[in-house]
Image (tube, rainbow, N blue to C red; front, top):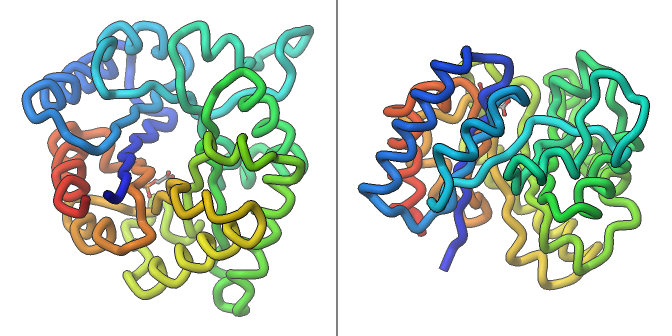
Length: 254
Ligand code: PGA
């Protein structure tokens, strides 16, 4: 059976009250519909604890959008993996292109964050993907391979089981234009093969999510691709109806 994870990346959106309402709407839908797919919500840091209580006891997992690579210390403004675990997180998004672009995160720092998250039993949702210029220069696979090789440097076969990969072509994020199914299919097959060659056959089970303008209109086609195990969803995760419709399409592809 194909495993699916539908994860909402709320980015820097919503007030506490709005975030509580969104989480409650998703909670109600999941309680009524009991999907086989796993569901995760990744709200901003200040809302994590409150939302962990709203979704407690359901199949909805909590994720953070970032973490620091040290467990504690004098690092003003940062949030550590043990802190995230203590408020109920199972996942943490690492290496999102917005972090790479606006906060200068490089592959080495991302590797340190992945190692730190795993040390404290958080599952990284590790984001990779090429820019438009890199795709136009036919460098997509070179870039994705470099991101995986350095990002997953010194990760063991046991640890790879706790890592989720999110292929997110940078040019498709927040633009309303998703990659087409051929591009997604080809990229996911490439990533799967690379993981299997690097870590072994257990990577047949690694969750590889697609992200980049995934919405209720294109989800059916994209989520039915054989090597797509769900989605990391930005804009469309801010509306409970859109988000839960995507979960419905994930259910059809299992
Ligand atoms: P988007 O964002 O769905 O708004 O394109 C996806 C992401 O950045 O994870």
